[in-house]
Amino acid sequence: MPWTGLARLLASDGMAKKIMAKEIELKLLCPREALDRVEQHPLLRDAPLIGEPDTLENIYFDTPDLLLSAAKVAVRTRQSRAGAVQTVKCASESLGGLAVRPEWEYPFKGEFDFSGVEADAVRELLQTHKPCLTPMFSTTFLRRTRRVELRPGVSVLVMIDAGKVVAGEREEDIAEVELELVSGEASDLREFALALATDLPLLPFDLSKAERGYRLFAGEALQPVRAGFIQFGEDWPPLRAFVALAELGLQAWQADVHGALVTDNPEFVHQFRVALRRLGALMRVFEPVLPEAFFDDWTVAVKEIAATAGEMRDLDVMHMDVLEPMLKGKPGARRREMVGLAIDACQRARDRAAAALPGMTRGAPLLAFAQDLAALGQGESGRRLDRFASKQLARAHRRAVKRFDRAVRKPSAETSHALRIALKYLRYSCEFFSPLFETEAMMRYARAVSRSQDDLGAINDLHVALGRLDDWAGEDARLRVARDYIADWQSEKVEAQLAKALRRVGQLLRKSQPWSGESARQGVREARRRLRAGITLKSWSTVKVRSASS
Image (cartoon, rainbow, N blue to C red; front, side, top):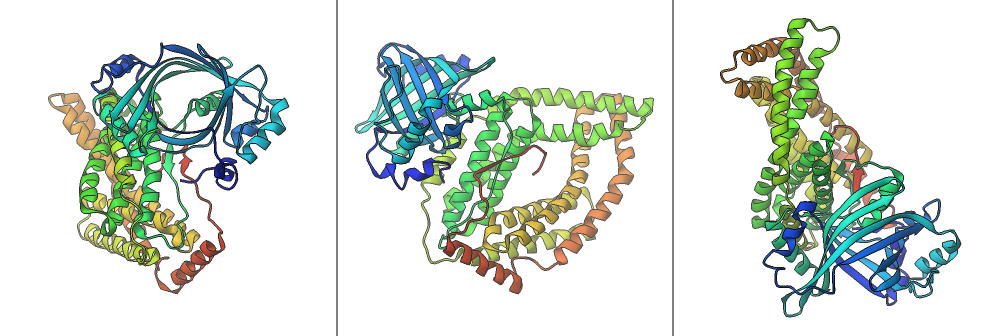
């Protein structure tokens, strides 16, 4: 994955020279009440303590306009039992909680000394702005450290931290387990983390304490994340493209699981499920180049994990998009009573689903997927990605046409839902492969598919809501009456909406597709010219979203 800011320069100057240290670590969040259980795990129980538990007091510095943060460089001082040290860290490559970052650490004698930073660009930046450095935020935490010898040649430090990040009057808990590789390979660290997370409520986490401190300093709330786009290399084989896209999906999955667990924002639950559904679609699109075992195992696993958030998301949609709109305007007493009964039942079910969510969103699957993804490699060259993409897009389009014909012949909630799923698959395929063609045309087409998908989604939302009311009613006569009232009130609108949605889908599917014909061939030639010239499209690893968008 690309580095950003000044850290990108390290590959060309300072990183070619020796550095003081290169951390390979994996961070795992842990509920504070479960931290003591970590040391009782069989893999840690007999591991020796490294020194006594120590309180680490850290102060992070930057310029008033946050130039170091913009360059992805962190400067801190640390006071511990061993004395005071200054540390400089640069941006990390991070995936599934595993981070690799350069670091320089020296004794601190009351004044910063950056002469030992071997990376020229980093040292020059720090020397230039040294007079302006000022404290931004602090972290204080108790650390307990154990050293685990997994096998000959493989050693890991396990650091269990409990404390706080403080920025002005704002503060945030620290409760995490950091695994740092002493000797061995990065895959050894992931395997060890997976063994712990299988038994403990540990969640891989890519944000460093410094990044959390900067967010707190700025007063920024956590925002939901969705997978973004990527610029493919000119000669990438399909498997390499899959791995790059899957890594983006993994980042979104991890970030949104965390947000769903620590906030009440329902958009995190939605984007968590979207990330997993996109990964499921991605694997189906790239099925011809994936190992059979990987495809079989992970398509099933991802679908099952997505279902853990499905209940909460369906209930949120039922409340916001089906029931609440019925109370707009000037509803009479009868409508308020019927909808109120349904909303109360929906809220009770949502509370039950929310209580069960932490147990269903543990970190082991994230770590396992990251490990299996890393093991896939890059694939064989020789198979052109643009030709593979055209074939898969045409396949997705044919599937949507078949589902459309069936929905027209037998319009129902079931056939319209099947069409909606086919459109979602087509839309995701367009988004995955858009950099290979005329990108704006591909994205316009994807947006048109999305609008049709949303039209059909509203019909499915009502169908799901009525089914849930059926399940909840049981012997409750009043709730059964409320269910029938809501169905009658919505029925005329839904029938008109389905007819309109099918007309729009028919018009869309008859249009010329932007991945076929001369215009597409011209787009491919232009995309390849950009790649040869080193020109990239706007790309990003993750995109913050504020609206409910799937």
